[in-house]
Amino acid sequence: MTDSSEIMDKGVEAALRLACEEGWPAVTLSGVAERAGLELDAFYGVADKSAIGHAVAGWFDSAMLREAPVLEGTPRERLFDVLMNRFEAMEPYRDGLVSFWKWRQRQPAEMARMAVERKTTADWALVSAGLDGSQDVPAGLRGVNLAWVVAKAGRAWRKDQGPDFTRTMSTLDRELRAAEEREGWLARVMGGRRRNTQSAETPSDSPAAETAAGADEPPDAPEQS
Image (cartoon, rainbow, N blue to C red; front, top):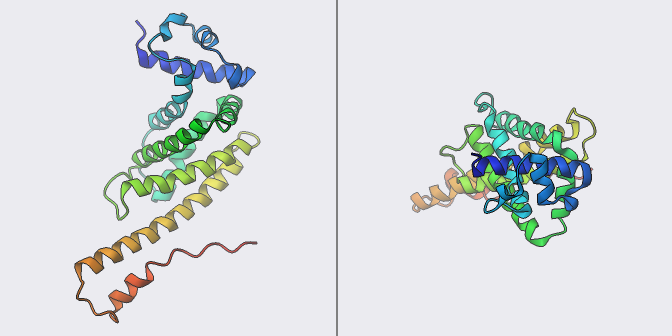
């Protein structure tokens, strides 16, 4: 007997294959069932077309996690490799995904859901890179910071031409470097505030006080060319 998770997996892949051919709006649940080699009633109580769409992001997160964890190199290098694993898994479904995302961008409720999905992807990318342990910056903030990277790299992937991922890799590398700078700034700010809390008697003209004050200044924005 096919269980619910297997039905959903087959449904997502079948829906994306159909979307590659005819666009996401034209995809129907009966068409998905036929392409997946399942009877329509297999989806009863499991998923309709909307639920299948909501499972797409998680389907690629799972593909990312099925790769061996990336535990060597700097944190930025690990995250680069992990997220590229996800983009590589997406590539065979490019046309279907682009159609799906274009449809979602016209649906306000779907736009809100996409933001949540990007945060979930970011959180699991940190897990796959072995970076979900204790850090100077809370895990929630780290996930939000990386979710921005996921969004920017995803937009670059949509515009890439050919299978070499040139635009995607360039954007991902640049945005991960920027995220690293933001995280460093947040760590300095939070560390400075902790020191101030623990050492309220520290003189205001001491080096520690100067360091804490300077930490409240965010990284300089890049100059516009």
